[in-house]
Structure formats: structure tokens, C-alpha cells
Image (cartoon, rainbow, N blue to C red):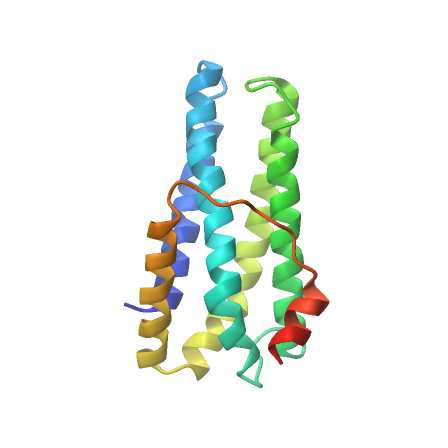
Length: 170
């Protein structure tokens, strides 16, 4: 088990669920809402697990495969992205399920989440594969899976200040 594979699998599931929703525009709102609620929980719990277990280790690397220049900048960007995703998720609740504005809000979550996943796959996951031992990646993966399982019913999402997050962990 490798944390980079666990995160990639979660990303695949997120993409799969957004694709399911794309095909549910004619469904009853309750059906689309049920799929959305499952996806919402997955997104929120996944982000929290990364913030607790993945990014703190990324900050210790001292090297960077991406374009941001440092693991600190890469991590600040990722935390900022998580905040955007949480805010976009929150916006969905402001609309009546099944309405055009609800679908537009879900499309926005898909966009900001997709942008984040692509960047993370290019940068953070690459850094981990290059610089973190398989033993450590395994240990993080076990903790990550346990966290997601323990919070399968969801969490209370909270935005995090990216600057404070990095400063508190360096």
C-alpha cells in the first residue's frame, strides 16, 4: 500500500462520481442529491486526511518536482485549493437540488477540484514517489485509509489559512 496510490484511487473515484452526476440531470432531485452527498463527504474527508497526513510530510522534503519552487509554496497552494473546494461545496447547499443553479454549483466544484487534482498529481505525488521511502508511504497510507474509514459519515469542514498551516509545521 502506497499513499500516492491511495490518493490517486480517491481522485479516480471523485472523477467517476462527477461523471455519474453528469448523467443524472434528468433524474429525480433526490437521486442526484444522494450521489452528491456521497461525493461531498468523499471530497471533504479526503482533503482533511491530506491536510493531516500527506502535506506535513511533503513540507519536510526540501525538494520540489513542481513549478512552485518549494514544498512550502506547493503546500500553501494545495491548502488554498482545498479552501476553494470547500467553499464551492458550501455554495451547492444554497441552491435547490436539481435546479439549474444547483447543477452549475456542482459543475464549479468539479472544476476547482479537477484543477487541484491535476496539480497535485503533477507535483505533490511526484515529490512523494521521488523522495519518500516506500515504507513511509505505506505507513501514511495505512493512517490515511483508517482516517477515511473512521469518518465515512462525514466531517465538519473548515477553511484553513495556508500561511498559518505551513508556518505551524516548519
